Structures are given as structure tokens and as C-alpha cells.
Image 1 (cartoon, rainbow, N blue to C red):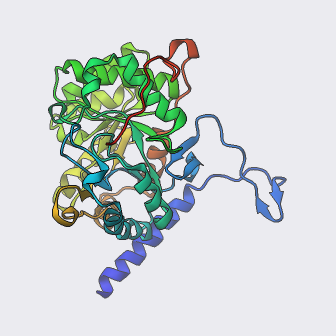
Image 2 (spheres, one colour):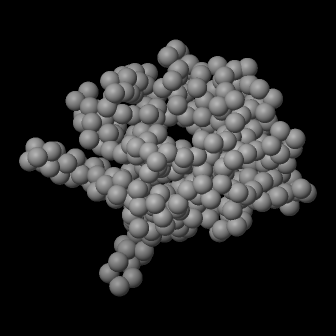
Length: 374
């Protein structure tokens, strides 16, 4: 017990020092008011939407890039808030969020998309109770053989789908004022199906209108390459794309090629069982000079709708208790750890400049209908 507590105190202190190293610079001694430094106005593109409001990207702190609080795998046709007790989900998730906060986490990126259990009101309650920044998303998930794609998406055009997502970015999600910080889509294997390609094109249109980054559940390098080709053809900077679950691709050459094109590789799924592989992946990217394109997280949680008591909630702790010490043992410097956990997430989540208005679909497009959870 004493060893565990000592290790936790050391880790919290070490991550605290790293966080201090990433604190936004307070510029100008003249910018003082009552003895407190006044933060300069955020630069364009540096504002991030959380479920409790906008923050400066510099305030994200240590960020877990891919986690879940609640997921419902029943499919788009059956998903509904009536299928779970939000208070029970809140009570289950809150201790885990508080725990990771004590380990140094400041921001959790919640990657559950619409029609898979996205519940921004639950996330807002949890953010306020835990003190963590929580980010949510817009977009549709085309992986799992399109089970979670709503029926209308097969009939609508990419422009019409984008108009829905742009509306959420501009006005809020599910009738709230909570806005998405990023897009979450998903695709199956290459060659991309018609609906998966449509989702990528809709994401491109939405990005050009809003600047939101695109995180895509993508199992293989071939599928990731196909997505990049579509985005590049739509004049989307590839630095706006996050290849989610990149660790699933066993051909390392894909990691190199995608990173060198400017996209982000997310090695999520960190767990005690995967620790050796994840450390090897990150070490390899460092050796290739590509550490500045790497994101890491657990893909853990969650309250599983449909399972008794929400099933078994996997904690968000392995990155702190095992992965970071593993990086230290592998010779990673403070600056390199800070890059993975602070700087890379901040850059990946930053909004890009919007395309000229006449070149982007706006939420004033005809046929916009607010998405409903059920």
C-alpha cells in the first residue's frame, strides 16, 4: 500500500511539473490588474469548445484524446435515452473521472458519437462535478457495417449531412447550447463503401465551414489512406485528420506514410495487456522523427447501456500508472512526454481557419433537420 501511494504521489507531482511547463505564458508586466496577470485575448483558432463552454486551447492541460463515458451498441434504429438511467450512469462514471483528475488529467475527449449514446447533458453534469474539461463531437459512425448510421444518412447527400453537423457546431447539440469540439466519424475497411465515403466527404465540407478537426475510427492503413485521398481532393489540410485506432494496423510503413502526409496517428487502447506494444509504437515513431504526429489514450470507460449495472467500467488510469513510467524507462525526456500529453493534443484539437464562406456549406442550407437521440 505504501509503495502504491508513494508511486502515485511521485507520478502526480511529476505530471504537475510537466503541466507547469506547458502553462500559457502571461505576456507583459504591464498587463497586471490588482497584482494578477491578465491573460491576453486568445488567438484565432485557439478556442476549444467544452461541454461547459469555450476555453483557450492553452488551458486544455494534460489531455486524454479518446475515452468514453457511456455507449449504447444497439444500433441507430433503437438508440434512445429511455434505455438508461442517466443518474445511474452519472454515479458510475464520476468516481473514475475524479480519480483521473487526481493523477493530473485536465481534459477528457469523449468520443461517443450520435446514435451510439452521445449525451452532452450527462457530460456537462460530469464535467461540473469532476472539474475536468470534457469535449464532445458531431458526426456519424460508419464502422461496424453501418449499424450506427441513421437511415436518413443513406438517402441524403454529403452536403445535407454536413449541414446537420455544421448546425450543431454553430448552434449546439440536441437542443442545447453545447457545441462540438471535433467531428467523430467511422469507416470500415478499404475500399470505402458508398456511405463511408459520403461521411468522409461530409466531414470535409463541415471542416471547411467550421475548422473542426476530424477523428475517424479507422482500422487499417489502406482505409486511412483512402480517407486522406478524399480529404486532400476536397482541399482539407491533412493535419485536420486523426487516424483513430492506428495501433490496429500492423504494417508500420502505413504509420510512417500517414504521418509524413501531415495527419495524426492516435495509438489508443492503452491497457496493461497492450502496454508493450504501445510503448514500442511510440518509441518507433520517435526514432522516425514523427513524435509530433502521435496521440495516445485508453479508449476506456464506459457505462454500457443494456448490461446490468452498466457493465464493467474500465478506468482511465493505465497511461498514468504504467505508460508514462514506461516512457521514462525508455529514455523519453520531460519535453517528449509533455509533447505527447499536452502539446500534441492541443495542436490536434485546434480549429483550422475556415474556408471562404461561398466555398463551404453553411447551416442555412435547405433541408437542415436537428438530430434527435430518440
